[in-house]
Amino acid sequence: MSDGVQRVGIVLVSHSAAVAESVALLAQDLAGGGTGPVAPAGGTADGGLGTSSDLVAAAAHRVDRGAGVAILADLGSAVLTVKALIAEGDELPALSRLLDAPFVEGAVAAVVTASAGGDLTAVAAAAQEAYSYRKV
Image: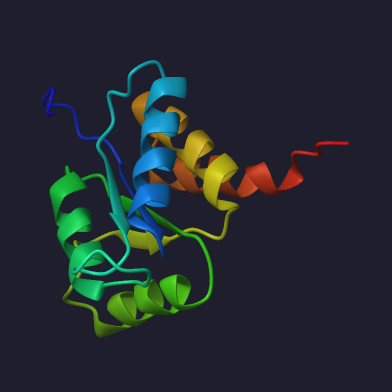
């Protein structure tokens, strides 16, 4: 979807395709249907559990609208895969950034902020602020 407005794209990287897709749908629904580009990148290319650098890079290019790409990862090697892609320097769109944020709560905050037109700094701040949400 493109409305001609540059928005921050969001990529959700999980070891599980089902988790990445579900969190993307949840975040988009909670953002009111989502006007910002969001792409899941879960599991391996053959549908297994794990992380695929090719899937992450493809998802980042799909959501890139020129305002940056915020990437949230669930744990362990998903984080390492994104860090390696960023270190390589040419696999992800310019202004791609791994966010240090909780996966579900951070994704919702990031998608809501991006859908409202927030820039990459605002999206990162919103996602990282999700660490402060107390449940009890």
